[in-house]
Length: 234
Length: 390
Ligand SMILES: Nc1ncnc2c1ncn2[C@@H]1O[C@H](COP(=O)(O)OP(=O)(O)OP(=O)(O)O)[C@@H](O)[C@H]1O
Ligand SMILES: [Mg+2]
Image (spheres, rainbow over the protein chains, first blue to last red):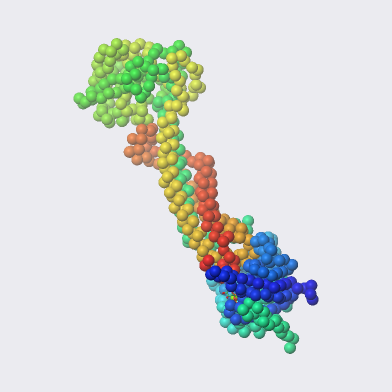
């Protein structure tokens, strides 16, 4: 079990400069995540959820402490290495979907694969698989503007999943969705988690999301106040 | 390759604004190439006309001869040098004697040059055969400009007065036997072409000449003592300079045009980087390096240039080709530049011109597209993702 830990966080501190001083957004976080987890960081607004996800996602760097993702130390990565880590191993799902408006659904999902220098044929297969997972095989040629919010987020999930990453980071993925769509995409992600053993880490304060989590990490003022495992067997 | 593909998707996806930029830019392309082609066409036509009517394959000038100094013309003549006699006989060289004179058209006084030419010469396009006639007066051929300024018509008589080699004044009447039409003002304005023999008699200068024009197909003949050989380059220097000056002058116009196009593209780039910062953040989250994003946006901007080249080719090639075939009618006023200018100029477009212009535009567009991307490197991906303004 120990050797399947893919994220190790040790005494993580993150400070932001504000005005003359520093604001401490994360204050000594110790956490580990294993392969195939379906975990969520929960807590009130401003507690540091997004900040934590950003650092795990190598979009930001720790002020202090160590964060290791797939044996790579986030604080020490060059821009290029960080980009490569994200490209090859991490998937992102955003609150605002962040699809590229001029691209079709197919092209949006294909985008990460273009950076991976895959052949056109294998790209096509992968994109078709991913769209099948999220149930959008019939919208290949649509553009984001022609899709509903739920469909957009499902495209985003397909985009995050298409390269079969080890870790998917989802920051408030349901904030712009109604209840039905929220359940829908969570069921999709739960299924992918089970089938592909992808680690999912959410940041959320949405009850609809929290109900699906297998692990809840409670954050308050930049500290972990509770880390509970939920038994889903019953 | 990926960057190209993505840039193309983005650019074409951006729609109207892209095409507006592309059209403005393509317009710069066509105008630059057309105008440079026109000047080049003018240059070639002017050189050709000058060679045919005046310069030939170059000229021997008597060492005292200075076309810009009317006072020395009286002394700048000599007998045909030995070395050129045979060539003149053969017709590969033709002598011209130049003297000053005064004419009195309609009671006015006008100072002119009398140019004595061999009626049988074939080297210049001057229709010298017309002066070989048995009219009693001095038979004279003049150009249309001269005819207009003196109001002389074919058959008219005009009084001519001159001083012979001894300084004695003499006068006679000349009869206009022909009016020639030429693009070359310098064989027309303020001069009359008369038979060489007749002029020699009038001036009492038997066998004398001022310049000797060589055939344009004859290779440069060797040096001749007392005579300076002026080659085509020297004699056509004025045209070269005027055309060069015009090229420089006109480049201000299209630099302005290019500048406008660049401004539009720069503006588009700045705006699109600002509007699309969320997209930039997303690109970075999906694993692009900043360098790749910068490259993407630069290529996207630069692609305006490529699209413009294509669009310019689509409507430019027919327009330019049509213009090259049909010629471009020059306004009458242009004649006053003092350059040989035809009523119609046929632009000529060289490969160098087209390639040079394309490179110029592409390089400038690329630079202009790159400049605003420095903002991208300053963006924080975490904030760009959320579309926050920094
Ligand atoms: N770039 C920054 N500069 C300064 N302060 C920041 C910055 N980013 C985050 N913070 C601060 O850090 C704290 C944690 O922010 P974070 O976005 O991680 O909270 P969150 O838990 O995601 O909140 P929410 O639920 O509202 O999304 C907040 O108080 C925020 O103001
Ligand atoms: Mg947040």
